[in-house]
Length: 270
Image 1 (cartoon, rainbow, N blue to C red):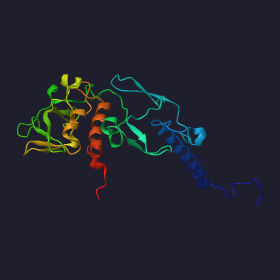
Image 2 (tube, rainbow, N blue to C red):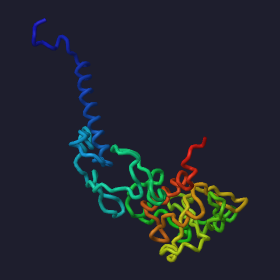
Image 3 (cartoon, rainbow, N blue to C red):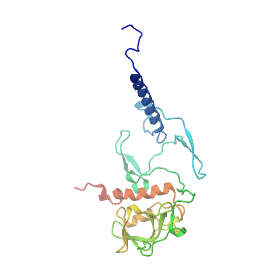
Image 4 (cartoon, rainbow, N blue to C red):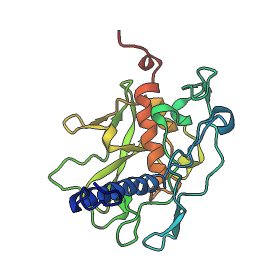
């Protein structure tokens, strides 16, 4: 075969296959860069020079892009400007090497450690399509009511994991976008809660997913935390709305209680 002639052994199907390989490789690189708009650069407790470990990897994150949020909520940039690394309070490394698990030294439920951890979301309320706060107590809405033929959770006793009554349900918080209950507002029985939140009438919220409602006995049982721990539930800044950050903090507190509410919960079952 004379040299320089490729038409005798390269056909259209082969060229299309090569073109697909190039396209698919470029698609993978593009998608890999785009998924680095959140969470990068990674936080590292060791320097790149000493460990030879890159905290961005390959390929590099894309150039920042500005997104315009709906309902006049401003703009957001992604990737976001890198914030200084923050230390997690109430913890210590379990070993000397970098990346060792953190051991809680204080109250892990209040410090946001392990299952009680939460992301730093925007401290603004979620909005409906009409621009109103999405999650609100039913007392300020005109579109929600408890069906008269159904049991009303308001006034029911909230029984904690230790079998003691922590308080009673004062109101239910609903989702304006969907007909569902998201939180129970609990008026505590204890008189030790003399915080500014209690004086302002801001009661702790119990997420619906962490409650079991027994209409027959008129009780709402909570297995994640003890009765005295209800007074430390993160409160909302407003008595009539909740922000995205507050939702995560409250839910994380109850989730962390499944491990940290009692010392025996951290021990093996056998």
